Length: 73
Image 1 (spheres, rainbow, N blue to C red):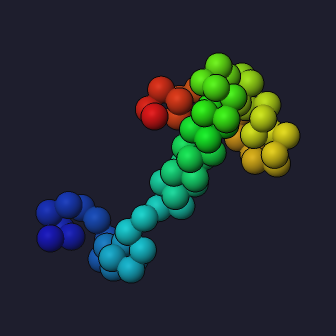
Image 2 (image 1 turned 90 degrees about the horizontal axis):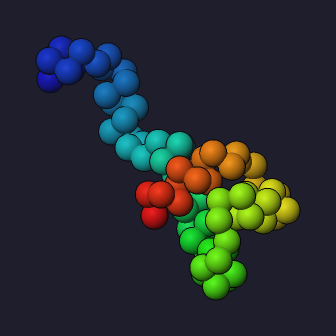
């Protein structure tokens, strides 16, 4: 199967032990925070205000990422 997918065996077994990537889990946490801030401010905040609120709370991200995640939510 690894040969068909052109994936190294070690990468496959590493994926089996930890199938959720760090990026996916980080984005999932960010989505939850973005949604809670959006609802907290009566659905009036855009990506810029939410970015500044996240920055104030000590969450490292960019406004571009916040805008992209808001489109997906």
